[in-house]
Image 1 (cartoon, one colour):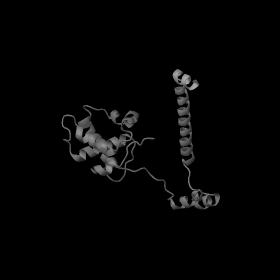
Image 2 (cartoon, helix red, strand yellow):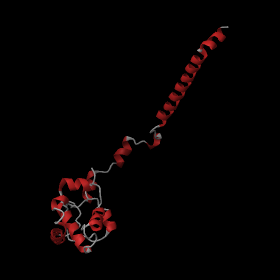
Image 3 (tube, rainbow, N blue to C red):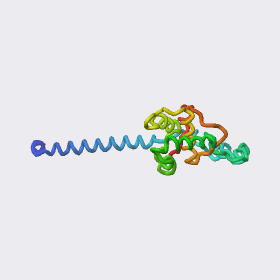
Image 4 (cartoon, rainbow, N blue to C red):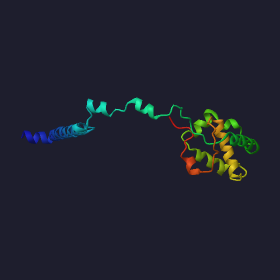
Length: 177
């Protein structure tokens, strides 16, 4: 009689919910315990001890001895003469639509941050000058590119910038921090 009363009043559903919630909770705790217990654990024999850390740690003097006393200069990609020719070409070809300030400084560097030198070069070749995209000589485009590099503080060197798109695409202009 009591069972029939509980069934009719819905108490059986109440007990089923409690039982199911309890099973779900236990299962969740079991799974989380297993995941937490296994996460990031390495076998004990691969963990370093104090002796192996001391033996395997490189000594700073070894590194210093292998380095030359000269400081390492940033890579150079163009010559001063090439940048000067680029400035002349920029004035003749680009200045009617652009100012040199568009191609230097924080705004320019922010816009091209993370891009490769090759991508910038292709943009210039494919889209400039606006009335004749790709219409300049390759050397003229390279000279203008050298001028842009010079405007942004890239050091000049002994070798002129050459039209090697694959190599240019490996050079990130302004690396992301």
